[in-house]
Amino acid sequence: MHQQEQHQQTSGGANADSELLHMDAGATAGDTSASTVDPYQKLNGAYSVDYSEATMSLATPADGVGAAAAMVHDVGSVTPDAIDGGVGSRLPTDSSDAVHEMHLALLYLLSNPDEFSRALTYSEAGGASIEDWNADFDDNATDASFQPGGPEMSVLPPPLPYAVFAEDAEVVLPQAHTANQLFGLERESGIELEAAAGIPALSQLFLRWLALMPEGDHLNIIDPPGLTVMRIAGGRYRCTAAHRVVWTWNSEFPPGLFGPPPQEGSTDSTPSSPMDELHMGDLVTMTIVDVFETDTDGRLLSYCPTFDNRAIRRTMKTAE
Image (cartoon, rainbow, N blue to C red; front, side):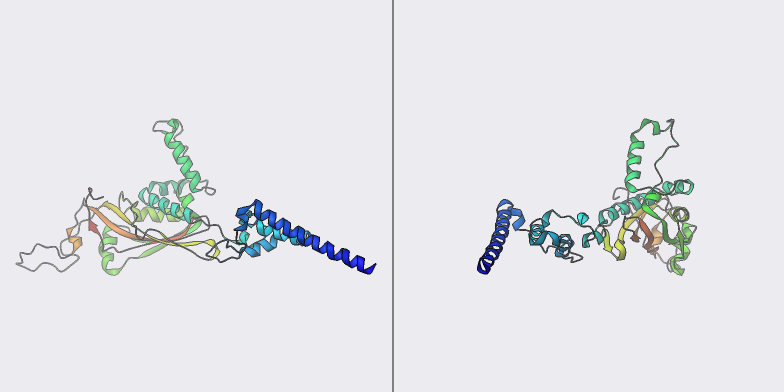
């Protein structure tokens, strides 16, 4: 009797092992892609997260070893969003594409300061996104009712600053009120800066700074370096980029202001400084380095442009 029971247990264990082997063989034969899946593949190479941790969290002990083996073969179909409480659900979303779009939107804003003027009088702040703004802008541009003289000219897309900047965003810009101050006096004493927080306040500051470069065209990205994006704590991004602004020079300085005056009796007419070559009405260009930080959605949390107010040169319309 005892030997018979022992024989049944031994044969039962063997049958279970054979069923498990048969199941694995069937899965391998029926699904050739499953056999090539590495159960320890990474969710994100930058974070070096082990996929096996996520797989283990989905295995149910009640189903036994068969369920765990099935999970290994099914690991390719599991997405991070489907991992309830696993490591995938704790990874910040990749918004680097949104950051590139926000940088282009920022350069569009700098080239179209009217959007900042609209932001000063806009009363329905919040909820705007770059996608909504693009959609509304495209719809209004093709809708006859929004053309000049149309019956619904008061209906416009939300101001772009509410889609580009976070509500508590902070910017640091030059404090100068005139171009002669920024590009003249502060060449020697240094540029004085002023900070503003909140979209209405930063819009006022932007309007004052952009007025010193009237009708400036900022949509000239310098590539390389292009836009450099670095992810920091909390899924935010710290970014640097460079662009050129082109505008019409509206200042006139006396000769020799930016360099030693010419010697008496000298016949050398060469300007002592490149700034002496600039005259009112000339087309000029200057390089601006954009330094900003965004949230996880790509909206700017801070912005501080850096430029050299002595590095202005004349350019030609044909070159631009």
